[in-house]
Length: 319
Ligand SMILES: O=P(O)(O)OC[C@H]1O[C@](O)(CO)[C@@H](O)[C@@H]1O
Image (tube, rainbow, N blue to C red; front, top):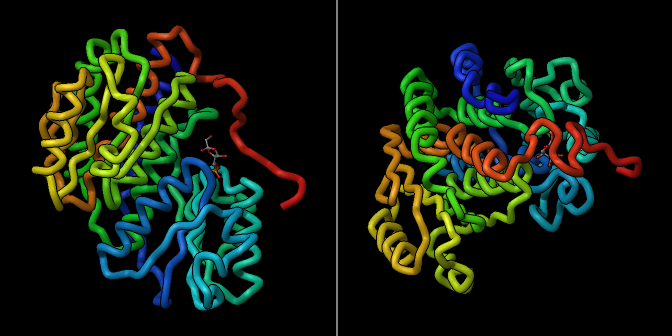
């Protein structure tokens, strides 16, 4: 087993260690979740989950919040900001936190680096230890930041979701090689809080395996992107609780056009039950999506420890 795979399959003890009381977010007219890359995908998922929990929220890429906050929220100084960064050193995220604070905004930093620059720029730090072998590709830390984000918006995260994620990972591991054999086009579908998780699944696959992957809201897929679908496609459907029947119809259409479907929480050529509350479905599915990226990379003979063009922390001189 390679090092990246180790950080995926050995992440659950770190989840269990993170199951501690976290307190809640401060009240504000809007909570703005910011981050870059994976951390922005998590921000998208958390903003949707926060709205579902009655906390008005949006997600904004850190650089956008830094450069043009009024494009996202006209009275931006009224916001509370939650900045996500594994390293706590990504230039745009640290700068967005610092600029927010300078404007009198309360900043909560979610990170796996307690002594980081982001921690220094945060009014409150929410932290968890991640797998020590984690490298460039964010695996265990991404799951942990999603977990911590859910905790601070008031979603109860317990042992049941850890067990569900372990089971989903094992089921995906069993099915993955047969599912991806000869397939080169990967589509991730999820709505609401599952959209950010779908984006993150696609980003993982893309980073690890240098394979083009896209994510869409499920029913959006029929409005154009479906034209690319053929017998080279694997579709990953993250079933939601709002319209699972429509999503199952879409899956049937995709299968009829040649796709193989990995369905989380619903039907597919491979069906992986999640068995958790809707607010926890994305967290339960995330390690399995990480593993899928590793499997596709493996099938292409690629090393996921040193993915092309990527570094662990992306710094920028000008931010
Ligand atoms: O969470 P951090 O440390 O700010 O890092 C985010 C980074 O992670 C990635 O998503 C993957 O390495 C990059 O796109 C991005 O620069």
